[in-house]
Length: 264
Image (cartoon, rainbow, N blue to C red; front, side, top):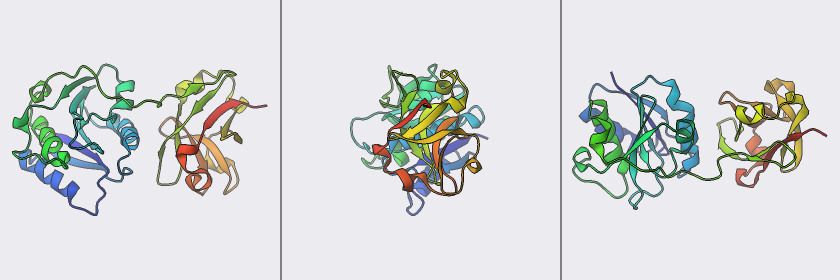
């Protein structure tokens, strides 16, 4: 049984997700649909890219991941089918593939331009229903990726998603995701920390120049309501508040500079 996962910014109040599922099941009635999340921050492509990166690997080979965070719907942006490691991603070519494409440079992408696999009438505002859902369903039924369109020579990738090395050592990062606990997930990961060399206690994490101490192993290592840095389950450095919300303490995230520097 084929699996199709859904990641969108549609929420669950409206009919959009249900309609996409109806289209999929109308074409491939035996497919198994998994709702990853429909609570991506509206129009936030980086949010969608992060959730996709954290999700796709854990599903069996052959899984089809449909990601719809599409502020440019109806414009000249492309819709693509990307194949990687035995998995497939159907998404707008607007940066949603940035993190996965970086992790898997062996990917192959196809531009969806074979309209026979779309719905008969394509709206200018709901390509999730009219293009992405039917393509995913036909793919689940065994249509080869190359049948959906020509090979893409490139994918549109977001800039500024890599940590910046600091002249005196360490890294400057940014917040790439905020989870429901208000934890600030950064783009500084284990590969960057491995380059620091010294024990983790020798390095402190700073938020806009304010130190919150070394990287901790658990939230409970600091008193309740204190801020801390911790390596999260995603393998990325997170800023948290023990039993609190770092977003409320430090936000908005666009104004935050996260640094890891040698302690003085």
